[in-house]
Length: 148
Image (cartoon, rainbow, N blue to C red):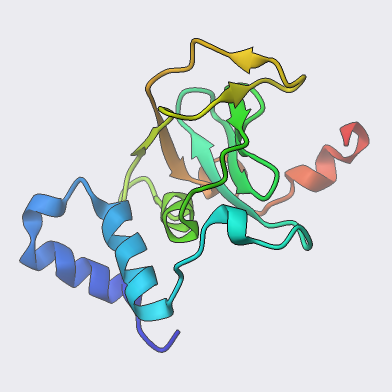
């Protein structure tokens, strides 16, 4: 982590202003190039449990990328974990003013609800923001401990 990807990403935008709406892709690319972050969510070991968090704009809930599933408890989940860790991390860092909300494609994935029933009417895209918009300190697991 000797390379500052924040600075590198900003310079990328200065020299390529047409990529202004592709900020997560630039951040993800730089994480892969300089930090060798090339894995998929499906590559993560089952323990310890990883959770890369974003906030879903449509539901204002925590959207997580984990070894179990990707999604939020109101919108639903996909168990298709073939997703870049670097891109999930870039979505998680999508600070509202600097990076802004970003489009996440739900296409070509099966979506299920909390009981495992398939969801058919999922939007083609959802929008994600920085996970800190929903729970900046990561305390949800503590204050919702009683419901698992």
